[in-house]
Image 1 (cartoon, helix red, strand yellow):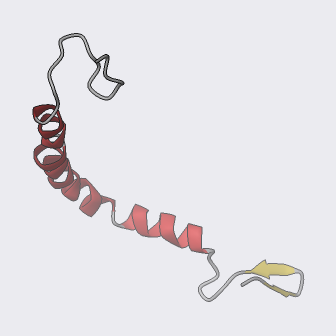
Image 2 (cartoon, rainbow, N blue to C red; image 1 turned 180 degrees about the vertical axis):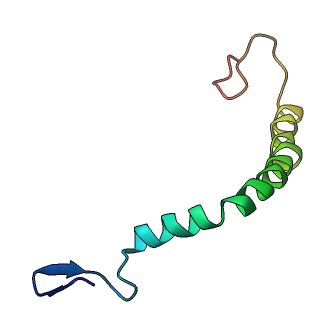
Length: 73
């Protein structure tokens, strides 16, 4: 919520907009974000990438057909 006071435009409590507060919190907490990145990467690699293999396992194998494309039967 913006308020105009004596020609100066201020924002909600704290004097910062929501996006400015978000960027400030990211900047202040960047060491923690760097520490959590490897954990998020490992979860992605070992929990989400294997889903591709499960998808292939339950399809009819036809050499030359695309995995996600149309079947040529």
